[in-house]
Length: 110
Image (cartoon, rainbow, N blue to C red):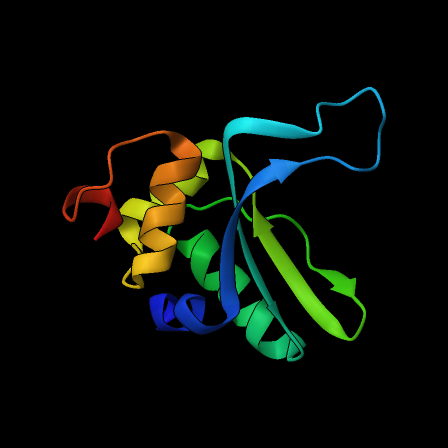
């Protein structure tokens, strides 16, 4: 269920900072997994389920009219990849590109 929701309403991107001038603009090999949708109830459900897998999830935030959760802890990002996984080829490719690993169709990205 979580994998299916991620395929449609999730994203993976390289961490970046536009808030602080002293921070790096983008962080090499630092992935962020994000779920963003209007339904706060679904976001709460996802947060609870991910935490049940031992994945650390940031607090629920509001962006415009959407609720957002992010996985920024890198150990938790890797756990998401192994426990939940990616089935969409785009997400698999992005994960591999961000972490600088060979894009293979087995293991943690299946």
